[in-house]
Image 1 (cartoon, rainbow, N blue to C red):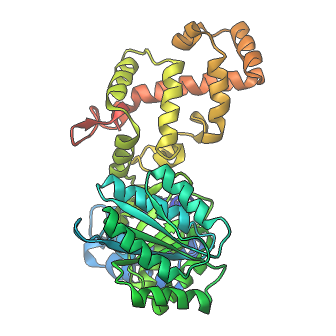
Image 2: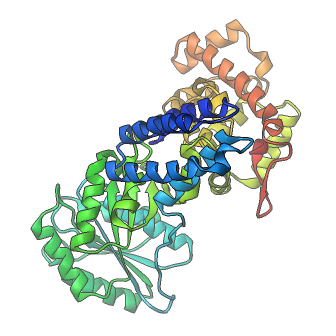
Image 3: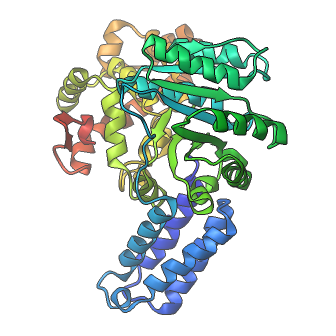
Length: 449
């Protein structure tokens, strides 16, 4: 996750604070100085950091904190609250008109931010909510942009309106809205053209659409990996076009994530969604409070549960849990479980959501997405009896399996070790997470999550 480095640094800072029985004003100031450095290194806007530290300091050196029985915890609570406030406090939804009217959303952004893919992701989200979206191909400049939108529209089973690349984007937008009215579509999402940088032609085109069409929402897509440039782009778009909300993409990559922490404070506009991967399902509603908790290592159980509800078949989960309790967890179960983890965003993403667990589990205990293909080959090279009874494993069997899978025997040994660790971890998980697990809407999380 984007904030992994920042999260580690903040957790270390607060670990030192919590270890002290009493805090002096100097303790707080030293800790906040380290927090300031960590935020700046995460590419958070300097003015935003300065204001954030000032607010936290004013609250943290107060009498209530200094005389508290757990002053370290109180400071963390304040940082959590201020971090949430920095990112917007409340979750903001896309504005949608009643079903008998046509909602028109204009998607904007620079080339390479993932705007066309995000446009299709939004359409999929709205379709799942019962809306009838229509995608309008208004990018007439980038080669294959129209084709890309059509391919993604097909995957989401959402229609795409196109007039080719020889029409003015405004005319395409107008025609798309008329088409929607005639065909029962109540949401039109305009995929407008992006450029490599903000230029006058692009802005004039967007202004023309804005001034001649009744837009319900203007949404800007920015790339988290561009750091402060993403914030500057957002500011410029807002000043010249006006934006109602922002989607931050590529927060799953090797990025410092400062854009997500700075954008709301700089533009005054909320983050609506965050892109956490390439798949069309990898778009998450942005919850400032949950993100703050994840950054501070407090976990995010609600998001974890929501991911599980979408990715896991309830009956299968119950069946697997029963087998786990009876120590009947097999290699077939393991393969299925790894597939579920992949669908839920990968192991590191899940660990960051479990309060107090992430730090206890080593990354090599379960494989990453890239290893899944190799794992499948190894498991499918086992006999049915071996897959169903892991205790049958011995050196000669491992040698045969390695040969069948086309891998070194060390890879088979590694998988068997990972399997045993996973079986032990998951069997113990209900106790670690407080017994019987949490319920939400009648759904019981597997393995006590």
